[in-house]
Image (cartoon, rainbow, N blue to C red; front, side):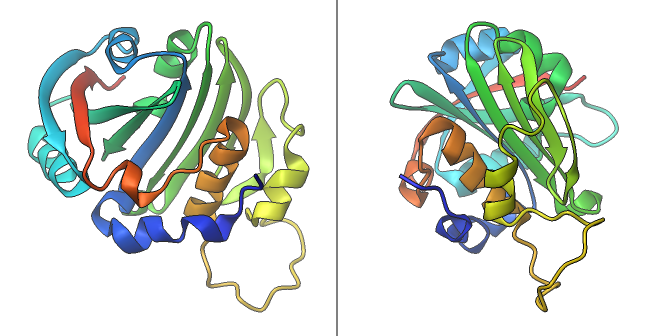
Length: 208
């Protein structure tokens, strides 16, 4: 199964409110309850479907006064999918590295309200293997920054310092490319059905 950027154009089309500010994380072999524990979180009422989860997350968060964010979790085979509307625990290395002990942790984040601030993070057993800005793959860090370079180029991530031959410079494929790279690392092809009507186990945790 080859991951392709075009397979994930549905995300921004189907869920624009979530795509505006989101973090998607896949954690292997860790249940939602255990993931919540690793994040130092607390259980919150369940929510069903992305629209309900997004509304609850924005109602939960109080700008400049609260430091907790709400997120939803569900199981996909041996993986736990964590969906964070307006949150970033998944790419917060202070949280992600210790929480990833004994597992594979794949996360990507983007926030159009913060000048398209975005990040991709791959961690194995507390080892940060790869981290880069979604719109600048030219600067990568981690213990294996170049292991996926061919895949990153094939998926269409931007390398701003390199000359480009494309005429379509206005097309921003950073988000679907991030989903495709996550699929490459997890072999999980996320579909709208995974989140549209899902009953999410919910929790909240302090943002550091």
